[in-house]
Amino acid sequence: MKEITVKTRSRCEIVDITQQINAELPAHIAEGTCLIYCPHTTAGITVNENYDPDVKHDILAKLDRLIPHEESFYQHEEGNSDAHLKASLMGFSQLVPFLGRHLDLGTWQGIYFCEFDGPRIRKVRLYFQKTEDVE
Image 1 (cartoon, rainbow, N blue to C red):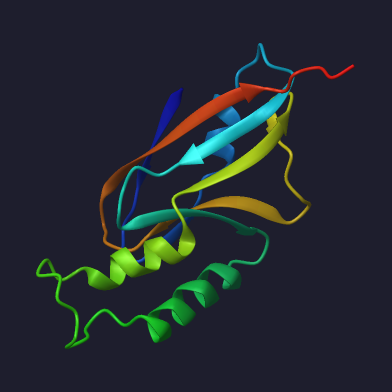
Image 2: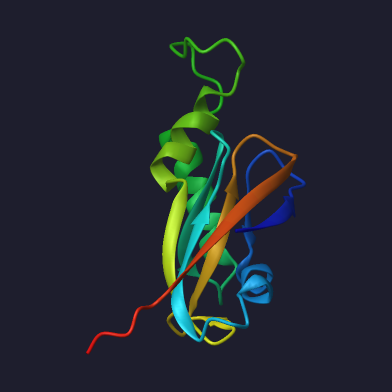
């Protein structure tokens, strides 16, 4: 297991963490899977397009319209109910194959850390599994 740190600067922000993860892939495993896990209840992990920055904007804008920060019916007293809901929709983990020292992503794909209750310093845990040879 490895752990990376993500420092966010805004209440809601999407950060491309693909290169940080690639840097942590184990050199002794030629082929395997990487479980990318977020141990926070107000942040998530997703895979999406990393070429056009407007994609990050559009995701956050739509989530804000669907789940606004200020709603009178929220009962959670900490004032971050929207962050819990958004994180649950995004999910807290992704399982991605890797080959050599690179995640096996599509041409336009990247791994995103999704912050919904920042700014904060967050942790992301990486778990590696070697692909077993099948004969």
